[in-house]
Length: 345
Image 1 (cartoon, rainbow, N blue to C red):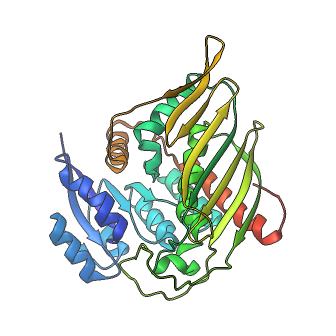
Image 2: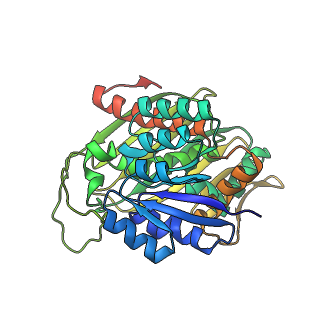
Image 3: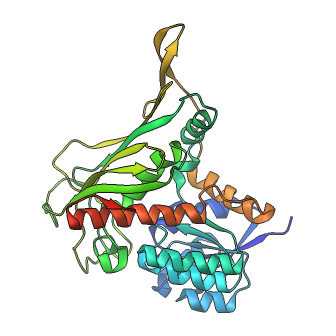
């Protein structure tokens, strides 16, 4: 089997802690090149992971390397230009969440990908956790009946990341676009990815740049906080074309106990994901069944699926269209919060 030549765009935390360790273990890929705006960081990552060449920009990397795929791990605002440049070179794309900084950018990416015909996949690791894959299988098999309601949350009491995350000019937003994309997608995925039609939401920035002691925070490798203009928290409801709805809560900072859960409810049964339980009926009585799955690294399964799609032409499960639709939901949340009313998606 010929090795697939992979280029890594961005040598920050997500690349070095999640993506590169997976590629490094595989014998069917060649880590051809890595780039970062901080060239010294790119060179250090190249040395650490056995990557042949390091560059100071995506443009330079794409101009000088013949690649089968790129893995986009740059900050959110740069997703679109990197993906569009890769598509124009005929290079397949794995793109970290969220797809883009705005719906406009996501649609530009979509046009470039469809024009070139390359494979495009969103990096949404929750979809590749064993319990979520089994949960979606149960939904597809009709075990839950019609799925009409779900709720999901990721609440950090104090957990605002430092660095570019709090600068909307680079991130596009706060917890909605950072961790909200994960929690909304994991519930939406379990629901069968129905078409969203409207959303009502609120955001809050009342806590802001707190100085709370004794709490841990994710720190970007570029840790200088150049701006702090994002929301702290958000909550709302998304309605779908099939009549289902999804309640969500997400926060970096909120005066509430930490939570991390997803629940979906159908006419026959319901699921919770932590604990992984199926709530239904057996022999005319209520039943609570604990489900078990073998552990697996979701990033490893995700990247394996992406490489499989490149080799076989199979459509990625976290598709281009799903990326655009998620971007519409995220933008709808911010628009609803700004207007103080429900908006159409």
